[in-house]
Amino acid sequence: MGNANTFLKAKISGIHKTIDKCMKVFSIFTGYLIAIFMAILFIQVILRFVFKNPIYGADELVTALMIWSMALGNTIVYWYNEHAVIEFCMKKAPKFFKVLMHHVTNLIVLITSLVYIPGGLNLFKMQQKLIPLGGLPFTKAYYYALPVIVMGILLVALSAFKTVEYIVLKDEKLLMPAQGEGGISLD
Image 1: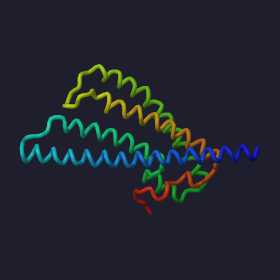
Image 2: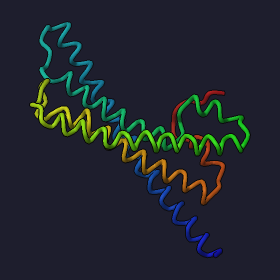
Image 3: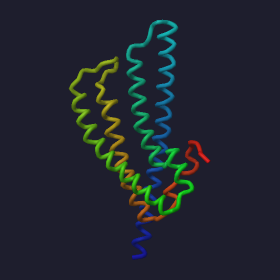
Image 4: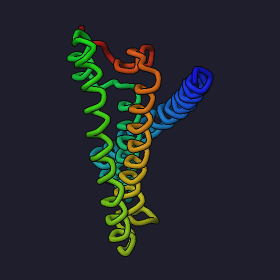
């Protein structure tokens, strides 16, 4: 039994490291998305208000990039437990409360994310039938519905993994924000 438990803990830790690497890639990718949409937005404002000649489709492209960055960003913040209010409340809480809130939060994320997936699929099907508008060569399904579906799938997987991970490892560090990942600290 001891070897099986050690093997399981090693596998869980290995999966955690793999997810961490994926989240770092998502963070970099999301950072680029934000930089791109901010640059496009800046250029669009200058062109619209200074030169009275905006780029057709730029506003819709900014919307698409913003929605994708927020969907991925939500996943990243959840994985690293970086929501500022939660960190502030949990820092001085007793262990029992931290464990309870960890599981309650994971359950809420799991349930709401399970709703995102079929809702996003329905929205995708509806929007897929519409013609592309706003200057982009594809329908809004790819930047309104698809990010919701992707975020839902990622959050379901992450919330399930985080629950199992704590049950197996019982490591209190999993209950608090990951150190060194950025963000701000509220003391």
